[in-house]
Length: 111
Image 1 (cartoon, rainbow, N blue to C red):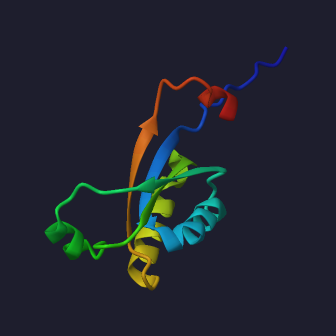
Image 2 (spheres, rainbow, N blue to C red):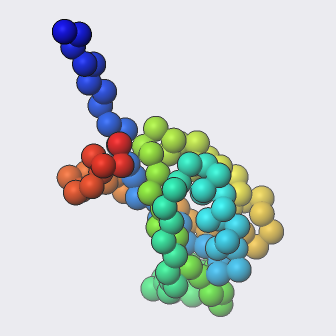
């Protein structure tokens, strides 16, 4: 009987992007094209003071938070693409951070 080679499942990351409300669809489509099959969108409101918001170019703008599940082996490419888009898309500024999904029920089903 041939032994079945076990493969380690690909780890997942929760990617959180804060973007302007009118660019939400653009960024969810971008994330989907980069391999994210799940995105959840919610309204976002910051707590930073106006000096920091003005410095980031986010003053007086409605924002959304996009929560996307992505594969950790694709994370570097996704973050590089987001960084480029945040800098190059007109009124497309945003911020992104990722959190590893570990010890989460259901990640084995995804793999």
